[in-house]
Length: 125
Image (cartoon, rainbow, N blue to C red; front, side, top):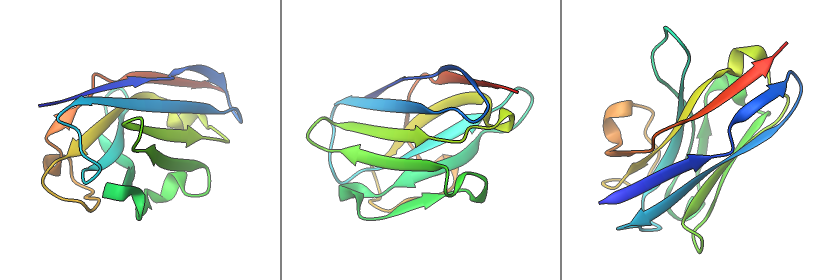
């Protein structure tokens, strides 16, 4: 079992920044790929960014490239999502997820077998 706990969400004005954290506990491993997803009201959950095991590879959805940065501190079992230049369309609940079967980043929700409870991000215009 892996437990994931997100933090760092909140209300911010457009153009501002937030840093989300995803702390893992339990059966953690540096080999797991970890990703951030988001879900806005009335919309499907979508991939935002992912980082491979060890942290050698990252992937982003086009809408956040150049604004968001995913990183991991394996010594702390924590993955971060630095979000800069936030836009109202970034408003959503953000979830981190771990894939314990693969070390590479998958874009699909079904690849991830552990999920956090989510943290809310609201960007005002």
